[in-house]
Amino acid sequence: MCPEYPEIVTELLKIAQEELEHFQMVHEIIKKRGYEFGRERKDDYVGQLFKFIVQGTRKEYIIDRMLFAAMIEARSCERFRVLTENIKDEELKTFYKDLMISEAGHYTTFIGFARQLGDVEKVNQRWEEWLDYEAEIIKSYGKKETIHG
Ligand SMILES: [Fe+2]
Image (cartoon, rainbow, N blue to C red; front, side):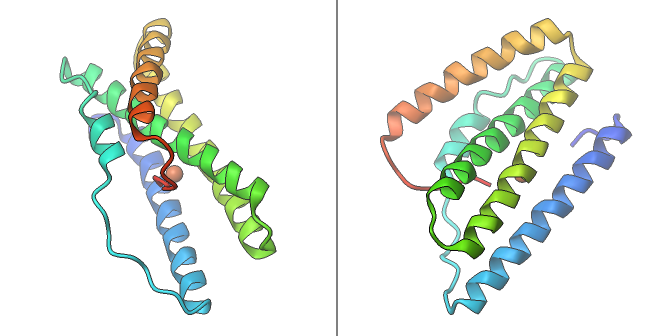
């Protein structure tokens, strides 16, 4: 994604490994409980967000990719918080809480990289634009119960 910043690649690999571990844990829980994964669905929300990434210069593009990822992580963190607070199942409560903490860490990492690569003020301004754009997407959905990891 950004070979010119090897220290970012190192962190991205850690995040990817963590996501993979979570996927494995979900898989184990689903097996243990006798369920089956649903087929993968096209994620319209992510597709809509993706369109907002500026092409601009290489650096602008990378910063926006980071904000795109930060947005997804922030929202999945929030959803895990809602699940954690509302679920009765103790095993899942603990599991979702761990995921929430992990997603919060990913959000912080991505937004941190964006601020590190660009002018902090400009990045913060751009983040506001992302929030507004995402709010419009959310408004168009109503209340569907899906998670974007
Ligand atoms: Fe994540």
